[in-house]
Length: 284
Ligand SMILES: Nc1ncnc2c1ncn2[C@@H]1O[C@H](COP(=O)(O)OP(=O)(O)OP(=O)(O)O)[C@@H](O)[C@H]1O
Ligand SMILES: [Mg+2]
Image 1 (tube, helix red, strand yellow):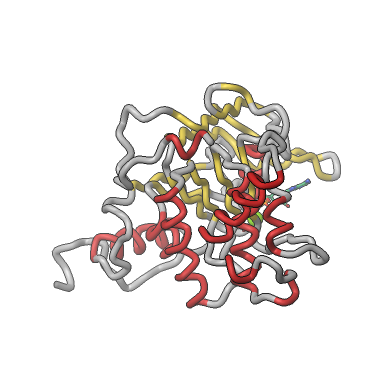
Image 2 (tube, protein in one colour):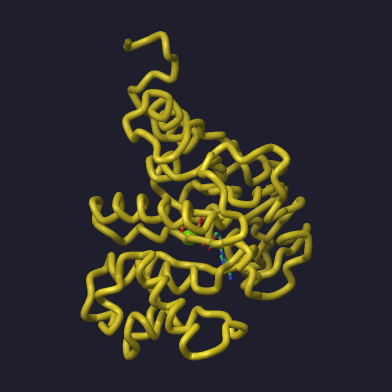
């Protein structure tokens, strides 16, 4: 239950002395396609502090999912080192949990049974396991739907079950690959607040991949902007184009002026032009 031991006030500005949960050193991943080497990630240096929420944003195909797969041990880097809590990632292990854009629940099992699949083997005893499943379902607001099957519930409910299953491991690092991408706008906003509630209760280190600039700025302490190496003519370019520290204690005001400025900056970095000025002296 390592993450529960770290319960602390949700001051988003993690103290600079905070321990490092995830460390990537000069990570590179290329694929060989038709005999040609295609770099996807290069020169990635990232340190996630314990309890931090970091968001990864970048154009489609730039390597966001690849990055998560590397940290989860589902794929191996072609260069560099990845470690969690100081020890190298060589395979999948119980320190990380992943939730994807689609819930990936077993259709013939109930939500409670799906969540139970995420529990670590080390948690012994029927009663203890059942109690933990109940606790997780309560955490994501699904206690009344425990006995329902995935096809009987809404997309948002299925996604919450998927989140509960990922949390069931009590991971040191929670990897989320566009977890709310398939949900309608209102459900998405609710899920963002739910994620913050969960993080306040169990402050796990979270790496969140999203296409949504507002979501990144609402949830994250830091936003990593990745560039597409295939689209970049610079052969030496590294994957991280920019890192943005997001100020403010969560929950943040979605309409905050400073956040709006960062939004414009991020969109600019993604090659989207906005009419919003990034200079605070204008438009006031
Ligand atoms: N096993 C593989 N073999 C060859 N190429 C791969 C493999 N896996 C990923 N790629 C390539 O790596 C690049 C990055 O893929 P990835 O799925 O990480 O992108 P992404 O940033 O998550 O995109 P999206 O936003 O669309 O989900 C793509 O060009 C993809 O085609
Ligand atoms: Mg992806």
